[in-house]
Length: 241
Image (tube, rainbow, N blue to C red; front, side, top):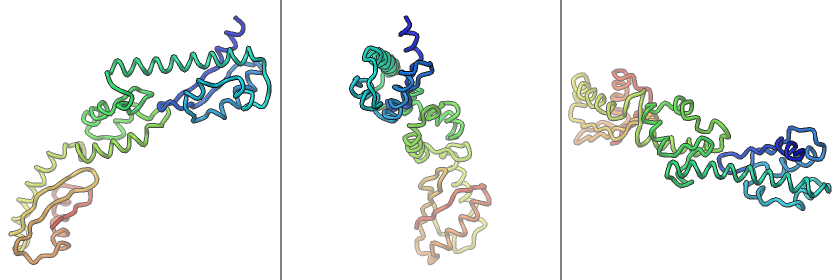
């Protein structure tokens, strides 16, 4: 009973990529204090499976001391049990969502890439709102790079600009271009424009010049100034001829 009480104060924190974040002991047992500290330093950011297979000899080598083998074995048994509980909980998440581990973006919150897509649409591409509501990368932070990478893909494929779907913006731009023909200099009237892509990073418009001798910089400056004035667009506008 005494050993069980001592061991209950040993805690392990495992991040979403199954890396050991910390091993701590909150009790006052001198041997456990001296064992846990070097173990924590040694296993920080190592795979949890390495910790699971730890032996007495490794504990001795890492700490530089010999300890009561029964105490060390009991401690390692407690750690293995906690790891099994963690893996069991993660397995339950995968089974409940009917997905594989590769489908998970944030292991800490059990958020899949597909669910992030749904958050993106529901929050209209508002990155801050998505992070706050989903709590992705808010615990261990190891999925932050994967989140940023996937978020950029979503911006390209399912973009929202100022809270509006990119398809809505394309309609507005097409209408503004029609109005542009009424106010532009005569030499612009034979040009044809088509929106290629719009996202939060830029707007790309294809221009068919036909027989026009106007240069791309002239066309870009004139149309860009008009669209930014009429639609209050803030992203760069690129004219492709």
